[in-house]
Amino acid sequence: MKKGLVLILFFYILALIQTSFLVHFNIEEQVPNLILIALVLLTFFEKPEEKLSFFGAGIGGFFLDIFSNVFLGTSIIALLLMTFLFKKLLEIIKGLNILWFLIFIFLSLVFYNLFSNLVSFFISQDITAIQISLGKVFIIKSTYNLILGLIAFYIISLLKKYVFARQGF
Amino acid sequence: MKFSPQKRKIFIIAIGVLIIISLLFTQQKIKNFFYFVSSPIQKSLWQLGKKISTPIELAFEMKELKKRAEELSLSNQNLLSEIAQLQALKTENKSLRKALELDLKKDFQLALAEVIGKNILKDTLVINKGLLNGVLEGMPVINEGKVLIGKIADVSENFSNVILISNRESSFDVKIQSIEVNGLIKGKGDFQLFLDLIPENQEIQEGDLIITTALGGIFPKGILVGKIQKILRSDIKPFQQAEVSPLFDITKLEIVLIITNYK
Image (tube, rainbow over the protein chains, first blue to last red):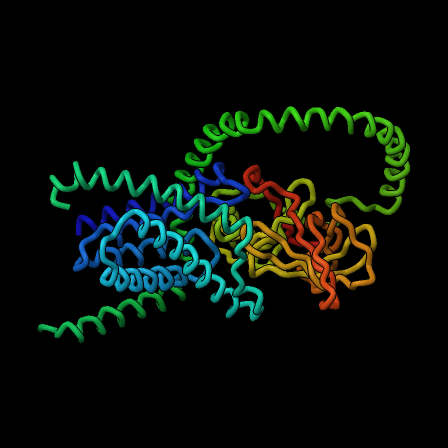
């Protein structure tokens, strides 16, 4: 219950930062998706039997939908599906490390964009809406997210080692 | 009452689906509530971001600024001679405008709105005007320079969502100003625009300005949309295409104008 409330507040703050603060730190009009990074971190660091990441996916998706024009539920479904896939992948993968984390961040970006584009396609019936541009913009977006993800990974690793372990997280 | 794990999973999924369905019917009210609660925090975060980013931007752009200053001083000389010519044209234009009563205010009824949130990832804005201020879905949104920003997508009581022209769901008819040729602008997401359906035999150039047409009835005619950045020609396609850059800077957008009515 306590963890859930903390998570709701945390994702709400991330959504506000993403839509109001980070706008000023865009690179070629690209800002990192903090909620996506936080969710991948949560999925990656929680114990395999824990299910908090699914709750996080629902809440994160909810706030992503609130602060955009998409139908409420679009990002919720996208993030829930993504978390489910990642959980399955995490069961298979042996020897998780930072490289796997970065791969997960990259996959989450591709998955989320593809899912959003699919929804756009169903709304607009325009086949070009499905395309994901793998050009300069995508490279900038991915790099920005990966760098922030990398920093967050090390911060959480340190916190887990020294703070969370003592508090039983 | 105890459920088996299988039944519990089905129960949770069913509850989830029910929640999502009920959200669809009440989404405007939910969004309005969150915008209402969040707007003071968003404003503070916005100001803070602006305060921190300005000196950082300046440091990064110093070299670029020096280069631009040199370029500008060169173009300044050219502009000075053009100003003299334009002064004469201005006087002529003024008298023509007066004669034709073509005042901007007479073309549009405008409502001023403040930007309270920007979702660059989704090419949308949130503004502080809604149904109670007479804002309706589909109304065009421009800036003070008569540059098209987007249109109202969904409206709650006190707030509205604006989908930018670069949003993937946006497409509308336009005209290349210099050659008076029609085409179609599509949003490509990530703040990018794509110009399509320009006949092969038409000579388009990088830097050409794109304006709206009255075709399709989405936007009033003559509003600036963007500038051609890169022309994409193909031997196998019957039409020319081009990458177009919008003419507004999303990071500097704080006040927008909603066209509530136009002739």
